[in-house]
Amino acid sequence: MKKTTLITFIAAGCLAASTSLCAFAQDNQQDKDKKFVASASEGGLAEVDFGKLAAQKAQNPDVKAFAEKMVRDHSMLNNKMAPVAQELGVTPASHLSVSDDAEYAKLKLLTGNEFDKAYVTAMVKDHHQDLQDFQHEEQVAANPDLKRTVTSGEKVIAMHTHMADHLAQELGVQVTTN
Image 1: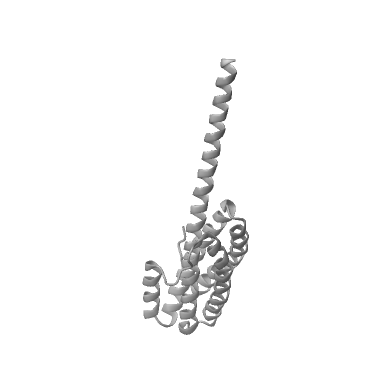
Image 2: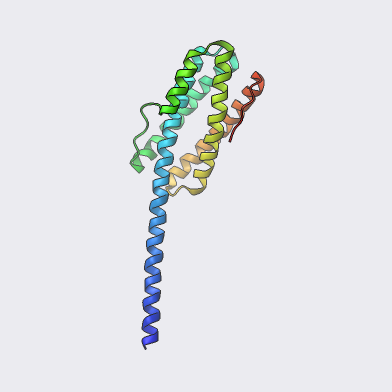
């Protein structure tokens, strides 16, 4: 009888530990989901602001058209992400991050072909990183609404990445991505 009691006690302890570990892992993924949403919000805001700047300053008509598409598509993605952010308790970004603000200031000083190349270089780097981030989040998202939004956004970002790569090639820009 003592052996059965001990086994039952150990089994109950293992079940409790397993449940605690599962809850910890779920909470940890929810924190990661929140960080992803906050980062995606900052990035989306930057894409819109950079796109608006490029729509005004770009010399190359293809770069200008790309910039206008960035404004439209990233505004749409930001709007789709907003309810998910609210559900997760994440406040959408209202201003550029420090690094995006510095990049924006740098771009603002450039003109002509120099501006076009710098903007496209930034878009190639940003979209390759965003695509990796969205693909990863698509695999691990704990929240089903977030997962659906990320899946939809990943398709748009993949298209943008292809377009940005093509523009870089067209402009003769060599961009190193991670």
